[in-house]
Structures are given as structure tokens and as C-alpha cells.
Image (tube, rainbow, N blue to C red; front, side, top):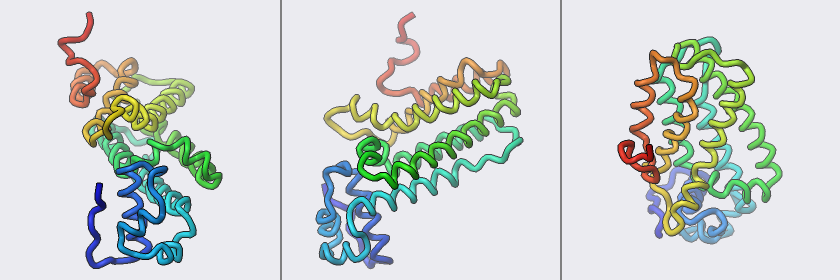
Length: 229
């Protein structure tokens, strides 16, 4: 699979990151070398090494970009009441970031084992995301989308949501062994996240959220009318 050609480069370092991201997403990080990236850009390996000492540095900088993107999406003002539109925005935005940098979560365990610096940064990133998800849940309680939750339950639900989001790419990889998942299939992970909300929905928003959830039903699940009774 070829890399999209780059015309009139803006910045060599940025070009390397863009090409690395595209190749990592296409082939998986372990199947891409710095020589592959340099070749895709029509530059010498020496030119690439002038900007990045090794492939791990490219991966780390791409993670920082992903981290910054998700952090910008998950800005939740404490005490703000949230509605279903807000919930959709947060979920769609996070999944958009997941798709753009999909190689990270697809190969996450290997990447974290390979780079202690990345492992430390990812741990801190996870902590921030969990706090942000808790704030989203608290906002949904204030907006009467969710029933009031205890702090312990809110924390547990936030963790479960994070686990589903961050492991969805790995699940799709095993479910579709012979091909890479499509963007639409990645977005279908939202169905699983919304399912976690179902037991705690307020009656006033239950039908709305269930209808919303159905719009993300994964292809791996049967249509609602075909479900086992």
C-alpha cells in the first residue's frame, strides 16, 4: 500500500511524522522501519535521523499529538449540566482521535513495553482521561440524563468506559483477522460505551439514548429484531 504523496513540503519534521503515522496505521508499527518512512518521503535515512534519532522518537511524538488532541476534546467544566448532545460530542470526538492514531491502541502493549518514557506518559494520560470521564458522567447526572451515582460507582463506570474505548481497536483486530477495521467499525464502539450507561439512565432520557445507541449497532451484533429472546 502506497503512502499519499507529499507535494511542496511545509516542514521536514512534520512530513516525517505525517508519513510515519500513515504507514503505522496502514501496516502496524512493528512492520514499519525508519527506512520505509524515508523512502516514502523520497529522502535519505540520514536526513530523517537528523530530525529523529530512532523510530521510538517518532512514535513518542505521535503519541504526544494524540494525547493533546484527546485532552482538547475532554475539557469538561465541573458543575456543568450535560445533555445527550454533549455525550455524543465527547464520544464522537474521542473515537475520531482513536481512528486518526489507531496504530497506538492496536499495538499499545508492545509500544508501552518498548519505551519506558511512553509508558509513564500514557499512565498520566489515562489518569487525566478518567477524571474527565467522571466529570462527563457527573454532568450527565446534573442534566438528568443519568440517575444520581455514588462516587464509587461513577469511578467504576468511568474506568469501564475507558477500557472499552481503548481496547476496541484490539478487539476489531482479532474479530477481522484478514483485514483492517474501517472507520465505521471503529465508531461502532460507541454502541458498547452507551450500553454501559443503560442501567443508570433516567427514565426521561431512556428512549432517546437507546435510539441513539441503536444507530451505532456493530455489524458483529444481530439486528434488534433478530436478537435471541
